[in-house]
Length: 166
Image (cartoon, rainbow, N blue to C red; front, side):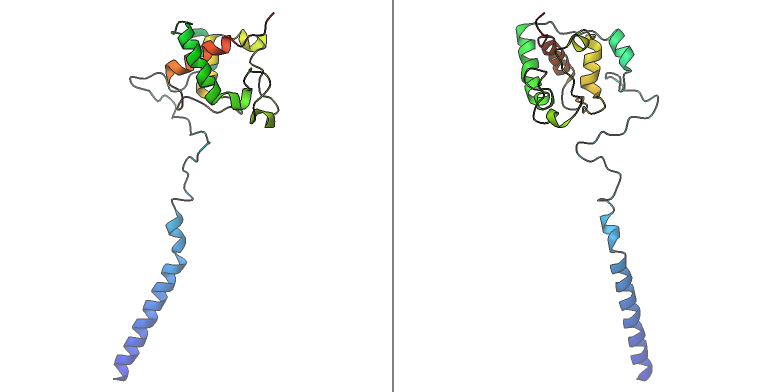
């Protein structure tokens, strides 16, 4: 009888040790929380070098190459400019302001939000403006996932209407 109770005591002690070990290993349930996931409002990692976008536009586009090779395929019609204005009001006003120069509610917290009406910006090629909208900048988020290709070009057309009168 004593042997049996000794084995029962040893068995329950082993069970208690295993349960305590399981409790100590509890953080393993948090692995997904601490993973290298891309959090909201954070830029995803760039694709590997030489990655191809099959049947799509190139994944990464050099700014110089964009400036030299990309041209706006959309006509500067009133409809396209109006679409660009609506998209500008949704995505751009918070930083650049309604008029493109005063800074919006978020842009006032940044030191260098570009004035979109100055000749330095207005004289840039459409392809360069498109690539900045698509891929973002040092403090500007990329809008490639939010805006479609035609929508980005419509915003470029609208940016041209923000010129300061000479």
